[in-house]
Image 1 (tube, rainbow, N blue to C red):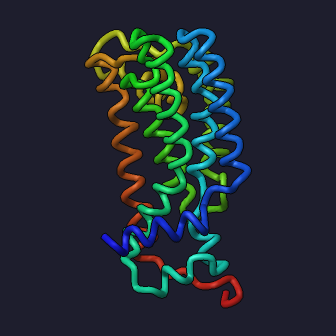
Image 2 (tube, rainbow, N blue to C red):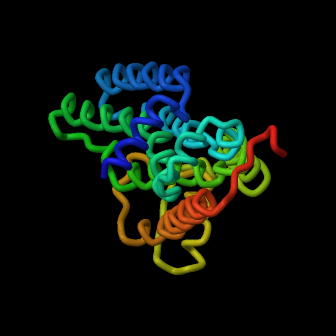
Length: 235
């Protein structure tokens, strides 16, 4: 446990999230809180910028800082690299999770418990996806690659495949052929489920994307655990 705590203390000092990114989260959280305070019914829309920013915060990249020697102290200390990867992921998404938690609690308080859109299952599913998949995709790539790639795929899908990808997200049945488009829509644009309490069919629709995100997280952690990271000067 001491080694794990050391990893988190290390990444608190050598943070994968810049101070500017953290400051932006603070600004967005305050702005969203003001909007929610004025109208708790707007909480879902108020959270969207935070989730978009979270996808970029999660796209922190591991390989490039490691090649530049930023993580030499960890990689040569004998720490389990699996725990290094998990600590890097956790610290990359911690600020965004804190922002969401503050807003979810604030929504409950100002609405007297009547509004819980920010703690709904659809919101949690979207938050998990934007906190996991961009990190896993970017682990071997430059910072922000996952967030930029996700945004490009979303915009391309919306403009070339269907203009309804940004429409309200709904599922009408559990038939596989009718679940395919909502499942793809959630993977590409998870923000469509924010504020929704997902029913059985909708949970089935989001499950493939969530399972894919978990699988990619496992692959990324195994890549960090088993990959030699030569310094740039040695290449």
